[in-house]
Length: 620
Image 1 (cartoon, rainbow, N blue to C red):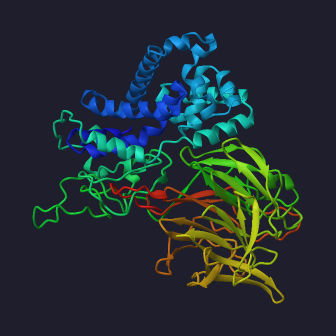
Image 2 (tube, rainbow, N blue to C red):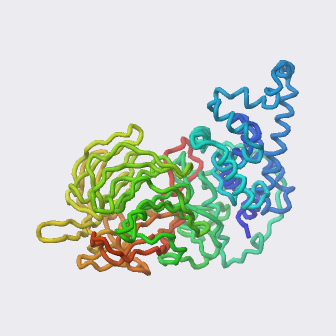
Image 3 (cartoon, rainbow, N blue to C red):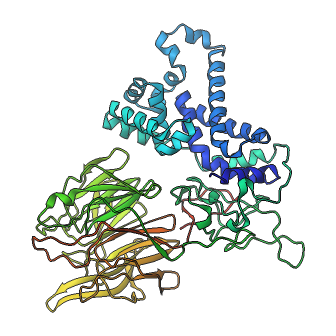
């Protein structure tokens, strides 16, 4: 049952108007996209979106079913768009428009901005589709809504939406879909939109609702009013009821790390303030800033912090794979389970944590394992790796999840496998690997060029790198020397700005072919292989701020050559094997296992800054 909307509406109706910002942030993208699908003009759609939320706030006391707020917004948007178009036709300049070609009459708004907003070919392609198809395409690509969200918004079934979307895509060429994604990305609502709405609603008087001591929709105190409002949208704004500054300026671009509606009894609110006008320090009547570690007065239900949960198996068993997160989906790429079956090394499978399901995607052009992937601007850059016969590769290919297509890019200067890549300021740093294991090369996606950077002090392959505060941490790994294989617990920090390296506190457990992920500014080192080639289940947490390590709960299945991906405070450990690859043509017992580790952290990821001081966000 959805409860968060009702909780926020209750706050709004009882005087905490700033709470409305949560609803604006949660639904603004879908309202904006729906308005655009009706008006075909970004400026008009933004004006209508603002009017929708202001009208919704004024009429909030008349809404009887609080959990139907989304459907109510759909109705308001549809009516306002209809009135806008009617007024457009009744303008004084309509007589001039009426003299034009009949085709122009059918699309007055679209034609007036055709040259300004999109390429003519894209408009023509969209014009050729039925309105129901144009609508779902716009909501999906522009509103960034999934099938279930579109279904709820339009009042249709998810299967019907999937069918419409599939048929709409089939009618458009791939380049049209790519053009649509890029064009829509350039016209998204700015983060200041929510701020503007909240400032406007402060001056709107609405009838207060009777105060109820109980929680809406039958929530018990045991759940602690633990609502997922802090994870609603790509631009979550956390406010005090007085609009007071709670911390640093609000980031201008944020991405919520929540992937769906979780049961309220398993959530934990952490490092975040919330709406409350009755906070006190227990000594006098002076207001007290809420405790960031316990934002809600009622006790919280137990969370799954520092625990592991079994998830749906990956369809294809494999190790030495790589994975990247894009739009709340994890894309697992490459790797294999049998060196005699090279076709497995091209497989791409998409994991949806919200539904715990897998979907087959377009194969990677170049079969490989021991590769590395990184994301820039929603595209996955697949770099290096090894062919089935262990030949190091310099190949770089880009996968676009939005279109399920691949593109070839400039080769990496140094062919290698067992490397690790990380992104800082839009540039990808390829570090270590089998050939020239200290090598660091920087790739600029904007120019499709490579540059040499300062070598890593400790040459190694099978390492893992992660980024915290613009610094890259290279952790663990192994090196094949004259005396055999050396496995490391080494941690070295790379500063891309200074192009320099600094040694940090070693990892407690020596291991190679581990995987690391970052949650809340801390790096979690998971699994790997010990010096005697035993698969490990070890989980250790590194805090760069204090340069210290902490032991965590072991992973249920010991494994190495796995890959992990973090989302909403959960780390998904995918695939792997119990033994190092022997590089001979024989079967290897690779895993399809997926296990999720709950760090207990729930927050947002911030990027950039908005020049205003009306709220605070906690960034992962």
